[in-house]
Length: 382
Image (tube, rainbow, N blue to C red):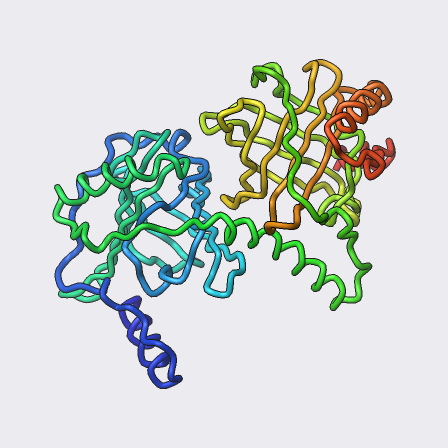
């Protein structure tokens, strides 16, 4: 079935006068029986991986900024591949990986349709992973892929070297593996386009126009940060008591942030009550940079800017700045004031406004975040 789909795409492309897709990855032979990583630990393997190299194929050749977000689920491992497509727009492909007798081998389900077997050939969990995927399209023809993943683009070269060696030792044609592009301007601009698209959709749908005033001219501020941030002490629940409103947050109330250290950095879950009065959650992964108080924010694998913990005493207040350089001359930036308890809102707000102002942030744009007791309590009860 997969083989026939590929052939049909080639025929349609030809008839439509489009460039013929690269079908070089359809090969004669049978799928390789790869030896796999022994006793794969799903929790350690989960999180965000960046695709730094792969064998190009008809579905992936035009895509950039590819990241894969893995999370264990009851049926196996949920996978969301995020990328920027040929039009420069963000795209996502969700799949479910269902484990076989070998816990490092999975059936890949796309909308319930099996699209081959995926094998985790090698991984150290923290820097690299070598993944092989193949489907026996006919008794004599196969559709196969190979992916090189790393947790950080800085690890791309050693990950590529390691995986090429591993794949080659098991008979895979490593000459077909090519680097996966992650141009900074494209990847950052894609997130900027998401914001613009939401604004357009809101307008077309007759909804109130979202406030885009937080998209500003200029470059992200280089904030001085809290020295030697202690992740354990910083973790737990924070209440957002003030922030600069934005398109994603203006209709939300009762905002709390739950932070917990993980192997890949700090997992963050922002809980709130949406415009319909229903609870909502937004999970992100904060991956630390050279400065332990500065993180890359990953949402389903897509970087959405840098987050800096500017100041905190761990017990009563935290001042957090987030920014993405959407274009060379435009930035998308946020500021948050957190407290452990609403009773601490006033002193936390006062402290953070002073800190932000001293570093050049427009504190007049910061507004109190609503926590109406009736709304928040009702949402929790539900």
